[in-house]
Structures are given as structure tokens and as C-alpha cells.
Length: 226
Image 1: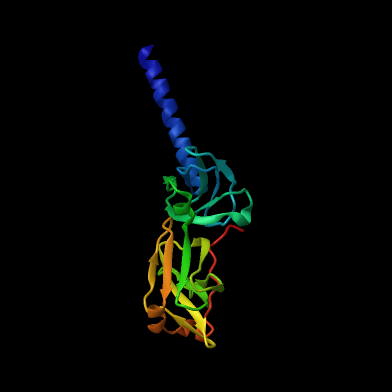
Image 2: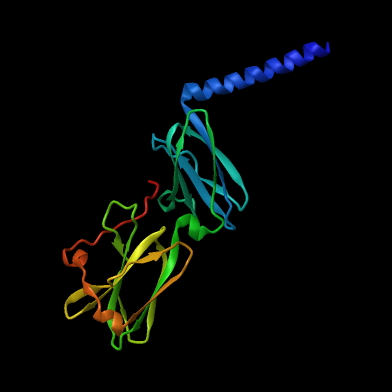
């Protein structure tokens, strides 16, 4: 009787495993388990090559959920709200048929969404219009500008929640109908506030911005879920 019971249990487990395997093989799907490791309540979604939205799910800190999607390129989205156009692409994975991938968010939301604050200080001795050109070596476009701001001498201006990734910034100013830029580019990292102080010495060493002079002002936006 004991041997029979073991046989029945083993057969049931084998049947269950085979049925599950056949289902993911038949549907050509895989699983992605998303864990919210931040201290904020966030919404998530995962989409496959078909681009179809699965389900927007809210996860509290420490919670996780599993999505079953088509095998291939899987896109992981996150948002502070449940609105589709508020979801930002936070990671891309390659999902093999019948595989299960685990994705755990960074502990900070600024690292998840890749943003930081950038402050520009004006110590040139006179008021100037400033702008900041943001680019990333992984971008295929020409980057984007944060927007022109006038900063009086001795004052500063902060661009909050700038999407930067692990990218770069170039600081520019406008004088005598011409835009000038810093000779050096500056590496900017997510979650690390960056302060640039423009002095009279730096303004002497600037050069004309060919990008702006040629009208190359990109409007890069992070990919959002439609």
C-alpha cells in the first residue's frame, strides 16, 4: 500500500510538471517575478514582444508578483500611479520559453527611475541665461536640454528630478547673441545631486556650442508605456 501511495504521488507530480511544461511550450511563454525593493508603493507591468499590456499591479515595499508573457524581449515598467502614460521603462530582459526570471528593484526610487537634481550656481559677476544639455552614451539621439533659465549673479537654480541615467551633462550660457559651452563634460549619476558653479574663469574658457548653433536640440524623453 505504501509503495502504491508513493507511485500515485510521483505520477501526479510528473503529470503536473508535464502539463505545466506543455502549456508554456504550447503558448511560448515564460514568467517574470517582479519584487518591489524600494520603500514606496509602486505600480508595475511587464510586456512581451507582442507589446500587449498585461496588468498594472500595485506592489507595496517588499511585495512581489509574477507575470506570464510571451518569450523574447520583456520590458519591465514602473510608475507612481496606475495611469499607463505614467509608466516608465526601467529594465529590459531576454526571456526564454518556459523560463522564470527574477527582477528586484533598486532600494531607492531615484535609482529605479534614474533621476537626480542638478543645481547651477552663477558666480561670473553678471547675470546670465543658462541651460543644461543632457546626454547618455547609450542614447541614439542628440540628447536633450533642460530648459533656459536666467540666473542673477550670486544666485542659483535647481532642475529637480532630472532623468539622467548614468549619463553626462554639458553646461551652457548665452551672451552677446551666442551660446557658449563648457569645454569639459560632467558625469552625472542617478541619486547623486550635482552642483555646477560657473565662474568668470570658466566663462573665459568656453567655446561656441555647435549643437545649439546648428539647431540640434533634441527632445529626448524616456520610453513610456502607451
